[in-house]
Length: 338
Ligand code: 13P
Image (cartoon, rainbow, N blue to C red; front, side):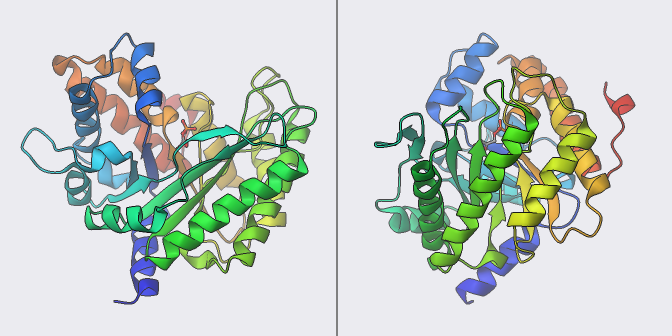
């Protein structure tokens, strides 16, 4: 099969109008923080049982089309010895892999960040592919301040995303392109819209320069919201601002936009996704989710590392996944919350 056909098949499996993506690709440092928040220590065995519990939730494949895993998880197995990537695939969930190696300061642009991990990427991708991964994720992070992101920050981060995406497509892996504009701060929704517009514009400019085929990628952006320390905006305003900027910057060839939750509460992430789908009209792309915290926070709390809590934690998790699936159809109502 040609690489283009391989990627087309992956896109068909990931983009079906009613399912989203579970981001379960926390690095060892991040998952330790998430575990600590519910009083758990992070051990290899704990991480394995947690991920195994998520992926073996019965019926998950009705709401989730893909899962992003961390490298460690590709070699982990469930209690019966089945690799976690196969546990996912058995539920019609496509396994994917986070391939960036985290972020640090961008020299020459105080306050901006840059992500590492391009060296040896093609070889790593071949290994992940042999382990079952069909798509990848790379995240660039943009803090907002009165002077960030700088012009250098915008171009350097876009260049990284485009180079990563081009390498993925050269080996038949579908790239998820994730420019995360952080919610931290007290900025207004208008400032968030201005920054996201510049970010998305630079990203698509760079993707074009690098010859990336837009038909075979997914965009994973932030929603346009006010900063966390500002008053919240109603879902209709989030949807209106987000759609306005997406229409200006994201070509129709992109099949799906899978938002990150980025520190919104689980309910907010769902209600905003619902508003986006109610308002999308004839927008050309699928509007979906690729949430980590908004799907996992309540689940992790319900689990608390106790084997006896697995069934109730899976019920919480499935319900969150189902509500987001309904939000993709514009059929979510706040009264559906437990
Ligand atoms: P959140 O949904 O928690 O923002 O995570 C999404 C993600 O994959 C961040 O890279």
